[in-house]
Image (cartoon, rainbow, N blue to C red; front, side, top):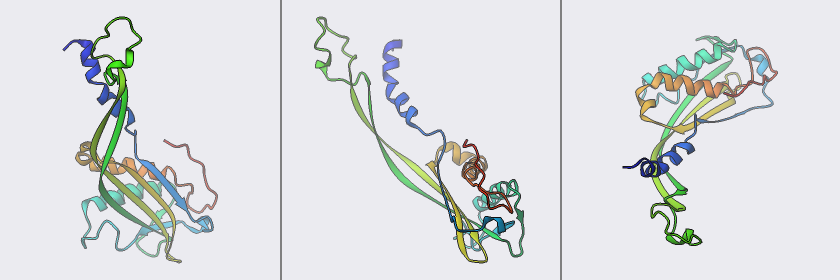
Length: 200
């Protein structure tokens, strides 16, 4: 295949890759009436949302390690006693369908370049082609619950595609996703004043 034709054949792939998000979409919300200055310690909710099977899974252990690192880096102290905050997790996956309509050379009706007085290269034209693809979407929820009031005070959600690389490297994937979520957490232990953090 000539270089020009090979370039044209790769256009759909290039266009599809350009639309892929560099990381998960993160959404957060919190109770603006809660006194975050009261919270200094944390522990795990029981049962955790990822332990529906009745026992602690490997995924739960990875989530605990990643969440503990994020909480302790903000000054919170882990305790198995009566913590101020309970941390809970929930994971789900769903099959999604993506429809991409791509425009570019090679996707055009024959008469598009009718203004030309010469015969264009048959493979050249501008138009569109629709590509339908299936993928798995994963959602991770992190809940922080005021134990004394039994009320959620903060929620972080990450939504993104699950790739084979994620499956092959679960610890790295969880660490990175947890960091992306907590990057939007605006408090440190013992302070009720939100801190603006640069988004990464």
